[in-house]
Length: 179
Picture 1 (cartoon, rainbow, N blue to C red):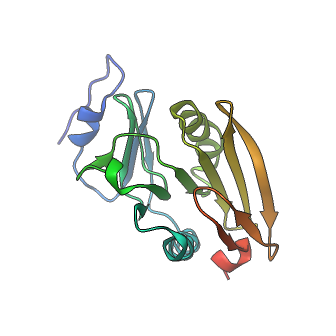
Picture 2: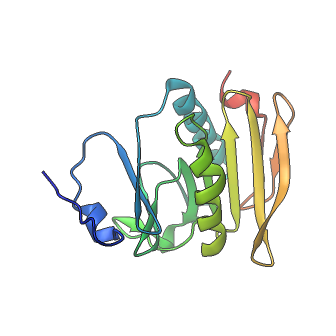
């Protein structure tokens, strides 16, 4: 059994020592965030979004699904549901930089973290685009960095088309991710 230190913020090395038990472990500013396995509707949205992004991505870009570590700092390791990055930025174990796009698919247990803490950490790290998909609504909200601060560039619901320009052109409707 791994015993985590309680007298200091956790680090990426501490996170690496946790055995794989089916939970998702992330660090935000040295605080451990543990989430359960997602619902089938969540996974459907992730799978369909992956397909749309993979079909549109250039060969020099990689589209990945969680779990895959994005190491923003020694005390912040996130696992976005979907990410897009340059192939040349990857290591065998993680992405040691902000992705070009991070996407979180909301779950009841992750909603506040995804909309607040993660969004703030990606913004501070310089991630150019951040999307949040709500599979229950269904909706997608997208932010892009403008002078170092996220600005909302789209909020789309149901069958309305969502057309992104960054990190590459792609169009889909939120409903298509879950129906």
